[in-house]
Image (cartoon, rainbow, N blue to C red; front, side, top):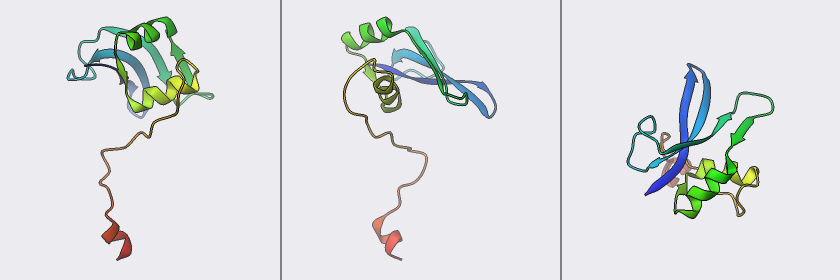
Length: 101
């Protein structure tokens, strides 16, 4: 499956991201089919540069967007639809039993 996702670049504690099109099983910093944009969350306002024609072409070919990229594209009005909930898998989920205790 082909995905459009973020690949982190930049110095320590100064992240910027590239929007990349690649195979889902590929390492995010590995080989990519195409770079389709950049995202800088640290600038005011947040800087987002997109190649809309390329993104729409890849989506038409069946590429899936990660939840974060999907939300960025909805905000930029490149695609239509509702936002998706982006989860953070690094943090362990709290169980209902721990909340009661």
